[in-house]
Image (cartoon, rainbow, N blue to C red; front, side):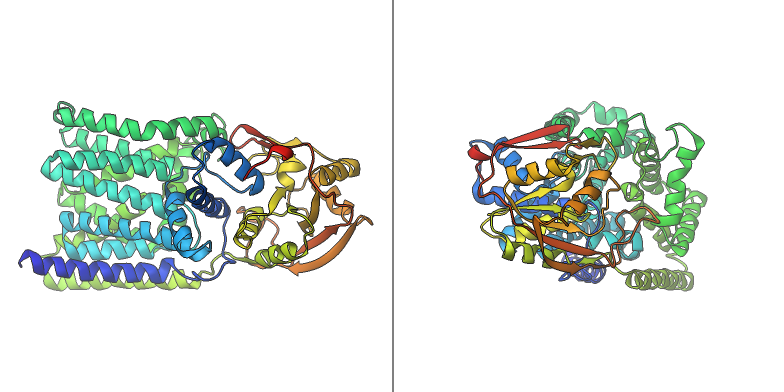
Length: 552
């Protein structure tokens, strides 16, 4: 087959893969009630960088960032890298501030990852295996769900797959350009999410097992590419060490979040359980194990690339303190590689190859059905509450105390194009903590007099709270009782309709059936006075804003 015809066929195949992925990843793209913990912060990171592109605050970028957080306290840049939000920013600038444009930015990463993976597997096992392996990991329910929210899993997985493609091309050709591309995209992968650095371990181990590490290390290009990689990653490392106290704690801290010590048997079983409980469906797991066994039986050296990748994920994320199942998402495409590999081994057995293809297709259909049987997590009422609060405010400053504070903040920014609203969060003003309500907890206000002083000093005219205190902390409960005094008028009650809980942990209280209460502060001051102090344990910083000197 000539190259032009093959190129046309590959283009058609990739288009089909994109359409298939879009059908799974872009479900409910117009529904702004969809949400997930952390996704709201990444959503706001994109809006922040969009506003940076508009304002171009070159003279005082740090002051701009601190002031912006004081106005819209739902950012995670510093704790999280900015590459994905930077792409979001371009989409928000082009299509407007809305969730669908941010999700399209995420899908752009998915397209890159699908393209790279198809091309990589095509070179390893042929186009048919490339199609089926791509459809397998894309249709896996655990993967597909991360396309529904502005989370970093699809972007970082895709960036690692692009990097892996360039590294494999280097293995094939020894061409220096692929070495440099590997360095560049490994760096960009880390700027998408720091956990992508595991891929460096993967690539070094592949070179070692293939007996090529020393020859590669003797190359001048290797050291130049390493310098390039270091130059790309060094600013990220500085950013993470400066603003990522919680990030470092979750990664290399001595207190494991899983409850098992790092070198215990229990710890080393966690990822295995996650693999079978979350990452792979049962038929996918059976096919992957069968394919891996076939690779061993046939002594197929091509399997080294995938086997080392799986082992690298297992070692790296077992040693990592954080054990959230989504962190190790990287090995799912590798298991899809094993599952589809027998298509190559059966190339001379037409009937067996056809039967195995039908089996793979059946698993893909099964997984697709499972994806559509899942209902995306949603919580309705927050956008409506922001609209009511904006309509009824007497001044620019609003106070919120809600579990979905990030989405509520996002909707205030979305519906206020002039950026005239300043949002104060109860879990930054009444108390402060890191990640959970009681982790690194500090209490800043607990009495009615404390509450009056805060509202007066910050000229708060409107307050939005969930009717139930979600923190379990006395100051937040007392604040809700304070709002029932004569100083406040209940403006509106917005019911919350949701299938989400107030935590990702099983058994946590549901949001559904709760309400958002919107109060007018009848004693609101005309102008804020003094200083706004925001303690941010998650990044190890305290922001102090002088209201009189405040600039956008």
